[in-house]
Length: 233
Image 1 (cartoon, rainbow, N blue to C red):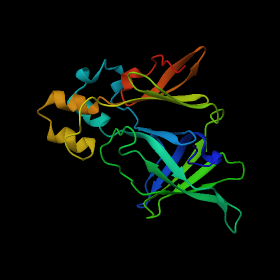
Image 2: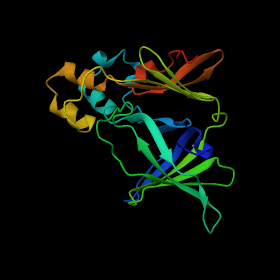
Image 3: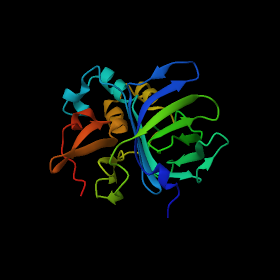
């Protein structure tokens, strides 16, 4: 059953976010893939340390592990009412995201847990999101060719979310989170326990797009996965 309007279907890539203090981030890779109900959201920072050349978490320095702990991603389902046109003719709706207990969370604690106030341009390809508190405003752009098909396929190792020309593979970590805190805090807390840090960070959200007859990973919370083939079908 659909829990969002069809105007929200597809893969949205964030152009920028402006925070309440006036700072703007237009470098973080942010992808929001939305099906009729289920969603996955991936937020990957730039890689100035070139972590992608590592062979795995075991091969990373502690500084590199700290950098990986700053990424964010989640899966679950979205609830959003039908868009309503205001006096200015702009369509708007309120969305809430349900991931805790319903999906996989790279970060144990959400940085922005409030709902989003959404508005769309005339052709539905540009979407603005405002936090009710004023904490941020974001601009999202629909990825061409991502409206359909919309599928979620469960595999033994994880799940593949697809919206047209974009797919995201999601695999949860194998351990329970010791306490609810941002991963950077947990890395600091367990800095003497290398095994624990690696297990906390071993949570994969990999974005892939078509490359000839294959689907190739273009970005991942585990950067060395970039370039690997993803089995989407």
